[in-house]
Image (cartoon, rainbow, N blue to C red):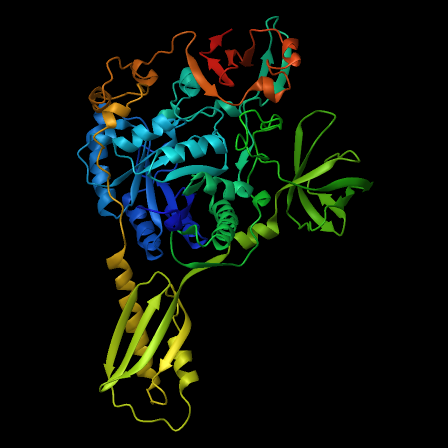
Length: 614
């Protein structure tokens, strides 16, 4: 039986392409997730099997895992093609597939591990138990869950539980959002989300009076770096960073920040946790989460279902940048700025501010800077007292475009005399070992040899290994430098071969006998015959067509379910006296599209209903 002492904590990073994936691993990821050739929930982040194979080769050197997203709903005419793709990914060495469509459990595919995507809308222990029983090897839970709810799910299953810790937030429960399809036929469950949640809206009451305006459904970005100890204590084993459309600089920075935080947690509890992969990362920069794209940060619902702090980004769905200082005066075309401590500006930096006169955001490029004096590259009027933001740091961009980390595996080499020769043995931090022997007449040297031996054996070049200890038991034996160098190369090659030969794969879990009994009646998002058969096998008798399959959205249909609530965000919760200040029904409007709103106070949820056209 597995004990908590044996539990590995996995840092899971996103990758939009192979190069970004390799950077994520180099900067400390224990696993990466990347889009396959098709059918990933980010259609713009597809990758060839050949590119994924290149990632696998690099990742497995460090025992890091490669997960491929095939987490969209599938049509019947796509199933055979998916089978072929899965076969190719399996032969390429991919560790697992992240899936949404239950047809994956009925396809004729190799025994590759399957992970239940967050698109499976896993927010209850019952749903998690069912998916585990059905054969899923890892469960990706909803972002909206509190620590207590997370702990309940972790206690309900024996497979690893994966939780998001950083990045952009979908305002709706994932897998339960049909607003994009209802508005323009682009299905989020098919990887084509139009992100209508990032549009500007007005909120109107029963008299059509405007109550709020702005980007009302645009949430801040999730940031749980300070909650890693609590998430681990709740039972989370995989800590997931969102961002399969983000560039390499973002992935390097955020992965590094979470790697360091997770290492601190593991180092402080060595009797409870361990790293999920091997290798030591050395960074040449200081990770800083506020230096990468974000809409402001929120802990979302981590601590409570009814947070009192703001979690939305009404003013803009874009990254506005870090606060750098306040404008204190003007000298001709230049401005003086009282900079925040530690802020240094560079020519070419991008800056901006919210103009209190217009309410809009004005951006500009800093043409030159000297001390606290800045000059814009274009004509711009900045009121005195304005807070400036920087969304492009040219000095840091230059750093992040360079080599910013190395990852090496610590190893120990022992050299000893053997009958008629010299033997070398190497053992690395993962416990793998290799040895080599060279027949040699070992004459006694006239001078000490230990330092010369150590220097030659420590030269591992551009391999993944770093010799941190040398045990020289050969005494004063004279070994030609060329001989010892050749032995070291052979030894390292043998260790690399050992890594490849002993890499441990996870495989598809068999469905449990009680899967049918655990079926929870979930029947949504069925778009093909195999998914229908799966649910029929589980005991479902009334399986509705998915919205995508029926191609219609009936009036009154809930197209978005969210734990985020505009009433609570604006201080008008119906549980408080202030809630009576807004007359229902409320409507969310964008252009000529109107979403009627419904509020479920028992579950503390907000529902957007099928849009109406004015």
